[in-house]
Image 1 (cartoon, rainbow, N blue to C red):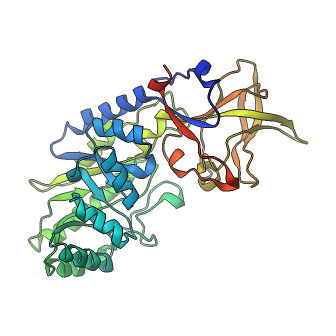
Image 2: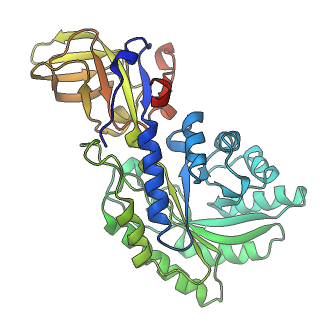
Length: 386
């Protein structure tokens, strides 16, 4: 599905801004539901950290997905968007007391816990409210992922999760507490993963742990494998919807679930990345000594991924049909890292042209900052501009 840009409507809008193709978003959600429903007890949550635009959240809630939250603010965003309390899970390595209280007060489905001190605090806070908190242990499986080092989360050296060696100790501690209930295991090995072998490796590690627990006659209600499925940043129109069929089939084939266990997924990037584009206007075209620069009114404050991860985003001049030329596409921020792409081939560009930076629906608007006292970019839905 090729994204259509309503260029005439864009001309009247202040740039930079985010544009979301809601038809593609709904198609993506429909595909997720279709593929997940092929297998009994597959439950999909949306990772709100990837994009918390209220209109995006409303569409995703309408699509029937649950909500994966990593802060109190995200819990509030989920509740405000209408996500049912019993479909909200709360993860994160540093939950504060007020955030835990918020989850307890709203009877959320589960806390994905990452340390013994966290379990003890949740038990104390739940005791004070005379409530029982469902907890799943986030396990660090020491499984690598073929992705950028900054978005790998499943290695022993990462800050996330409880080590495999400590599982028995944590279970024993939890079973002795009156106000927490051990209901599941949680994993997440990283993001932007396209090699299914990484997920197979996770399945194998989970199978090993399940056997170990089974020997103790422990069978948990749920297994949560996180998310991590990547998207095609190179060719967003060629594969606008990720390969959810292969993704879910991989877990169905390689993960040995026990009877009555549910399998939970926390998809973020793969849900929203391709539906969003950052739209920017060309401020200047500058001829340098050895190259020419396209200077945009969007910068790393609006989309930080290229500066932070050296991430690639396809860049298109959507108002020019002139022959292709090569440019460095940069922003106005007073940082040398404020570069969207080097040696980028796009149609010959002039001041005032509109540039689309594609596949920016995930970790774009949500990570925007006001560095250099810049305004935050607005987000517009395609259905608003028809």
